Image (cartoon, rainbow over the protein chains, first blue to last red):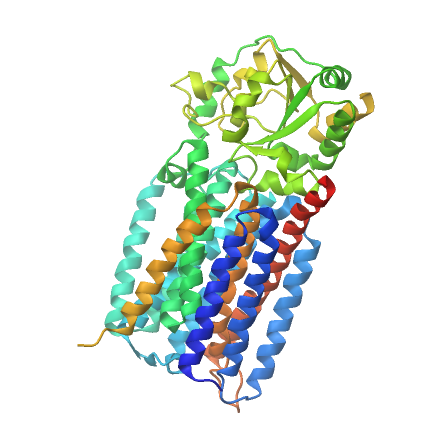
Length: 465
Length: 103
């Protein structure tokens, strides 16, 4: 049993350790230490919570039991999960944070006396509002993340699902949430509380279904942010500093990532959230697609070109993740390096399905992180590079974004792949990318299309090197 | 006149948003995926609320309406804590190995 003041100080310490955990991620060297700070912070928060309990009833044993059950499931998942499944794992974890927030809020609503918030039906007004916010945001995070998870896992179509009146429906639901919260505060009827949670689940669902697969980096970041705000809401209810600090950190972290992702696509946040991108453009581009001449080659040609190059830039995209081609890619780069070719990697901010997705996959394949560059760092180098090897990326290389103001992706920062002497474009077909527009790059004189699966083509090139 | 403790919590909250803002901008883009998994893990500090909630029952009946929700929340948060930190550790280890490779 420790005093409430001491308890608050320990929660503050764990909050600070969480800040240091994020601070560590500013460079790969300090990141592991940062993660350790995070673990220590968590251990402190849990330990002092145990110490603050005065009656060690049999319930305590169950707490330990459930903690271990959850912990082993989590550890099992963490060790088993392949790196390519990281986006859906993160989405799945977000849903758990959201649901946990909902459960804690329900528990606090049903037994407010345990948290010193008043008594059932007579909860302090401020606590009730905080609790409602925590529960509502938590529920939105939960159902939204489940949809994101299903889309990323491929269990649900990645294409946007839209229907007429969607935005008006969302607006009406948001208004009804506010009205419900108001009535909940007036008479504290549990029915209002349950309806509030049910409707919030619906919002999360409706919010994510119109958003397509390639916008997932924004969605995941946004849900990351929501899970933080939900935690902060609960933190206010429970008057817990660690939870408030963490919630604010996670909330702003997710918001910044969403901003970076939107900027990477030159789209506003609302544009992404309102969804339906690519639906109408797809039809218009199909009509304009004529049989323009395309040069296609095989692994032998590609190997010849790259072997005789002095510098090669690799441009990976989501297709590399799907084909699990990162290891083959690394092998190819190794043999190129043996031939004295200088190789670097160019990563677009929205390549893949989540922020930093490509970097993790390349790291998994043992690519040194100082060979991997961000868009701004490397974009000028394409002009001096002999071969650009585009593997699984499409829209992020489309020169149309710079030239055609009519294009839906106009203004989006793209990698200047076409400036390199020759472009090797690994793709299964000439089909347009996610934005539904034709890639001008396919028809350039200096482009050689390699029609094959990313992994298979890369392996074939290795044989020919 | 006394200041409502809520104002203190609000101050902490707002200052933390600012801290978060500056700290997260300094995170290198190549570590954005570990950033998401670690923020996942730390937001599961919500488990402290779950622990308190789960002890709402009396010693006679451990499981009542509200403690059951507490126990469920403990399981969910624990999955996240262990899963989040361990998977972050796994990812960061890969980044580190590179450096040794290079030398």
